[in-house]
Image (cartoon, rainbow, N blue to C red; front, side):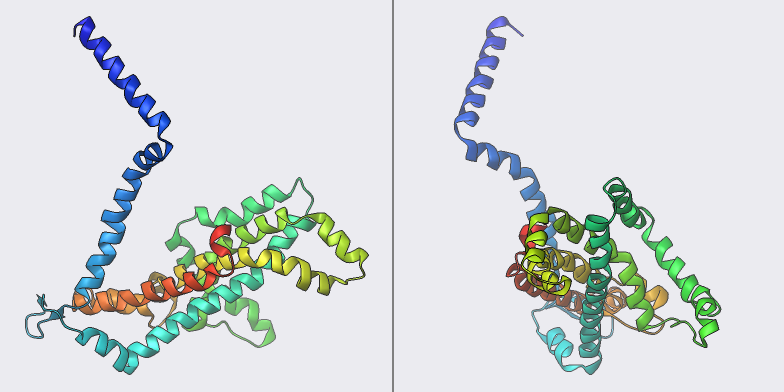
Length: 296
């Protein structure tokens, strides 16, 4: 390459750098173009294909997909009692897991953020997050052993004349609560760490007891973080289908129906898969009013 060509190349680079420096919006747009393209093509494109295929049908004789526009799948979804029961059960499981995670996570996070000694707090947070480092299947199968007949749950409850829940809906809720609990603890812990101590002192100086301080000071400031954690616990529980297959016994959730229909009736599987997407979108819109999205 000649000296003139090298000089021209450097000049072009300098002009381009100067143009980007003078136009910050253009620079930001170029930086975001690759991830936005990835999001649009793979994620939003996949959702579009999912939604379109939900309006197709299946040949009852050959089981081949017939790409003809029809609303039969959605009609069957809302008129078949089994589908309605599974949808309501799935939403109920997700809500139950979310409530249990919030009830367990709040005192846990309060202890790690406000009660424990400062030198122990990072270690406690690491201990809470440690289960996330283990394999999903390892944790679920561990709970399968715990809840099995004659397992650890039966052994611990036997002196009280009780037995473990076994496999079924309670086992599914219990296992999902264990799996997603760290996602609720972490945002609540962060909010409690950021809670100014002088607010608690001021509340006590004004004569408020612990319960009143919790209701009037702590809870309003931490509620957006609870809502933020609930987005994870709710969405992850609603879309889960492996846990219920391992510890759910004969229980069926939306994920099971989607999985069982993928090979037999792909359009119906796509129709069922649109339900959690729609429910999660509605849940996000509801949580947006609480300020949860800004706490993520």
